[in-house]
Image (cartoon, rainbow over all chains, first blue to last red; front, side, top):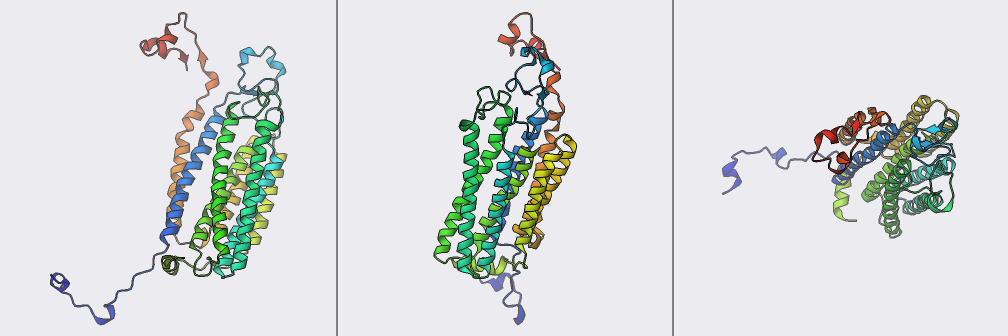
Length: 245
Length: 134
């Protein structure tokens, strides 16, 4: 059966070839944004749990003279002890985190976000050399962030001996306190995201060496850039919530 | 790259206006330094610390989102991705607020005179319900 038998409509000549309205977004970019929406939920879940655990922590959970969560009944001279609900920043007796080091690392990650967006801009201008150069810089700077985080983890878990208010064993490991498990969970998941990002940027860099990216082909670079900036954005929040507050 | 990508870019990509990314970078650097010193100076006042630092962090996050992620130059569709996720995430956190309000330090542990409540909590509902007096 022919189409005219079903729809016996004669179209005017001008509309014989209907023009499709361009979609406002490519499927790839839409998929990446949907993925990022799930990531927003994921990290909010982590940060929300952290807020609940911190707010619900007993006022005597941390002290300058006893290990975390020592029962108040087991402390013979509580009036001589300074108690905390949660380890405060800059208080070395209960908080082992280095704000100076992490502030520098935050700056490093911001730098990598800038080089990533410059790589995309170079690709859009069809400047293949600059694209490769900026991608290499992003890869190296992202790797530096990871390296600093690995160094920080090593110092916390093995390299340093901390006061008893930080940990009964002297090492800051995920099992020593609620603060430690929250810290390693949040920064660990973020670090994993950074590692995945560095891997993808390395793949982009290898592709750029072959001259793949240019003014007509930068979609994958844009999608990976979105992911990378999101990871940077999450770190800005995590740095504030975990380290500074 | 494949023709598919060319096609996708032709129909879906909007040329972004020129952005001075270095200017955004310097703003982010300035805000990071501001956070660092603000945290140092307002340690004694927790409310001021949280309010100031979260404001600075949200400004920084907005700069990254608006300019680096090009949210400013995308269509309205991008907010259909961001806003529901943020609203649902906020609801998820708010749903946890009752757990925050409950001050566990005020829970009084009542130790039963015999061991029955500890050994058979599931079979003796009266004992198991009275272990913690809230």
